[in-house]
Image: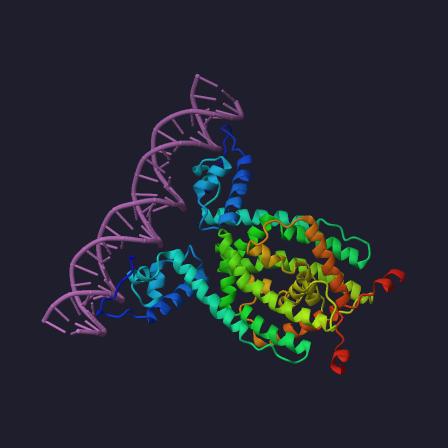
Length: 217
Length: 217
DNA sequence: GCGTTCATGAACGCGATCGTACATTAAGCG
DNA sequence: CGCTTAATGTACGATCGCGTTCATGAACGC
């Protein structure tokens, strides 16, 4: 169709520029939002001409979507790579919590979250997909672990999904609001470990987990 | 200085228009965001001329701030009016939870939250003030109740502020994410009651509250 | 009625940014 | 070297929305 057909020679497209543009787009969009970001600025950040940007991406919205998708992909990969862990239930949950919170409170994710809240509000279909790929996916994984533990009789819960949400909520606590409002800009590792361990401990007490009994079983 | 000096006569300003403009501004800002809203549209919604808007509000940002402030004021008033309640601890917490969640998940507040996340990210001072007036205020109130209960020996907690955040988190659970992503558009009263009661129950189990003991004391 | 203030509508200047066109230079292939 | 495609920079048309100006009419006190 309208596509190029590369008969033979000619200068090759510089594929490194795609990544540079996407990175610049991500930075700008996540920092300023869709409306406040300008293509000119993004091109400048990427060290690329504005025309080049339009060569590769249809328009501003297409670039936005591409940038968000790319970021989501790296995020999801990062979350799923962590091993199941065959330790005790607390250790298992803590391990997952570390990875999750470290990722949830990374500057880029905080920025992305702000973005999504604002710009995906009008497009329900897209929002739905992002939900299931992000928070929903996450909750489902934890629910699986909890359900297994419940079947082993280690804990007592009413509904795996609800309990998974409880645990997630306890982990996050007020950190979410504090980062959202910019009260806290950077969440260090010690804070994350503290929050995760505290959350897990409290959650397990809530669902009647008996550490001693589990150890001797 | 530059202000009017109302020597004697003259047509009186129509004070009802202020409210109309603020209401229109709120609707537009909360729906579309700061950048995407136009003064012309707001004026039209309010049934007012664009010039009139500029007569009363310095510029777009001033109008935005005024609209947010007005909304926050009604919110805070709504939250503080509820009586302390002299029932048992669970009843006290539940009562507060109902009011809070009903308000947190009202359409306007959900919209406002989206807005704040996005547009107040750059102005740290404003964000800080809003945090202390909103979430911070709320957490402090609950912390007070919990601290009193802890001193009476009804519950065992490490830190009132942290525990207050725990309770708030348990109440909200996944509802926040679900409304944020538009999975759920309207949260009905039954859901709110269920979530609050479940959250309170789980929280109290977590902090070692003994219902029977409290009742007989 | 008269002076004063409020309010409106239409028009304007202005800056910003989108997306495109064009001429020019750079890089690959034969 | 010729051919082809990539990439740049500048300039351009078009749109949009802010904030202002101006002429006109409407409400109110005296």
